[in-house]
Every structure is written in structure tokens, then in C-alpha cells.
Length: 253
Image (cartoon, rainbow, N blue to C red; front, side, top):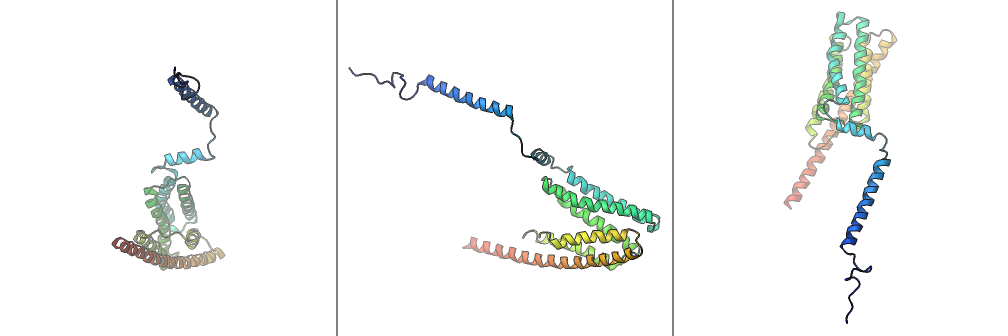
């Protein structure tokens, strides 16, 4: 008589039966549940600053900190103009208050961009409003100073012409790429802010002479960096056109 195999009889060797499979599955599920419970009980320490970064990403709306600083800078423009022109525009006290508002605007310009990039708070509103706020406060200061006779109009025309021209140039070549901000451009911005701030204050004596030379350096940097941006834009456009031509040739081939 032929014997029945142990596997068929439900013995210990061979594939497990239905009950054995169910028990094994229950054991695995219990282990997984236990591991999940342990993880939930012990908790995993988040990376330092992780909560701040996550909160910043979740709050990346128009009303984030970076955009609020930009809005503050825009609101400071009419207040600055009013302080500059108060009492005929030559009162040292009013000029000091105007300088304070100008200084706040320049400082917030340093922080809003840094916050937006660090905490992922970049928005379409910020991309448009930030450069407008920058040009608005600087343009208001230069026009007021020239209108009061403290600064030659040609200086205002050179600085504002360069700023507006380079901004337009960036938009024209953006289809080919982005012109990065150079160290010279950052130094130009800093020098312009210091020079204009010194002119806003009612300085006399050697300080008045010093501000003349600081403004002269600012004008030189303004022109030099403007020409460099034009060179970069021409190179970027040529490279972009060459890449497009090569891509079209590749498609035709």
C-alpha cells in the first residue's frame, strides 16, 4: 500500500497549511503594528529647523514675512517724500527723519530677499513688487534731492536710466536665460544707498565733501556695472540663439 506524503497530511515539513499561513500573517502584522507603536511612542526627532522650514513652505502666500517687508518698503516711499519736502525741504530735523525712513527701506531690502530664498517664500507678487519697491525708494530720493538742488539732475538721470534700462534688458533676454547679479552690482547698490543716505542728511563741512566722493564712486560703479550687464545680455542672447538653431537642425535631421 502506498503511503500518504507528510505534506499532504498536513505534517511539519513542506508548505504550511491555511491555518499556518494565517498565523504567520498575523505574526507579521503584529510585528509591524508593534514597530509602528514603538515609533509613535518614542518619536523621531525632526531635523533642526525642520518645523520652521515646513511652516514657511505652508505659509508661502502673498501675506508671508518677505512680502510684508516689501509692502512696508512701498508704503515708506510716500512717507519719505513727505518728510524730505516738509518745511521747504531744508529742515535738519525733518531730513533726519527722512533719512531714518530711507535707512529702514534699505535694510528691509536686504532681509526680504534673504528670507524668501531661505524659507521658500518666493511668490509671483514678490518677484514683481520687490524690484519696484527698490526702484521706487531710490528714485524718490534722487528726484527729491535734485528737485531741492542738492544733487545735479544728470546724476539722477544716469542712475535711474541705468536701473530702468537694465531691468528692461533682463526682461528682454529672459527667454534665453537669467543674468545673475554680480559682485559689482551688489557693491553698486550698497554704494548708492550710502551715498544717497549721506545726501539726505543735512551734512556740512568735510562730511559734505566726503559724500560728494562717495556719490562719484557710486556713479562710476553704476555705469561700469551697467555696461557689464549689457555685455552679458549680448553673450546670453547669442548663446541662446545658437542653441535654438542647433536644436532646429537636430529636429530636421
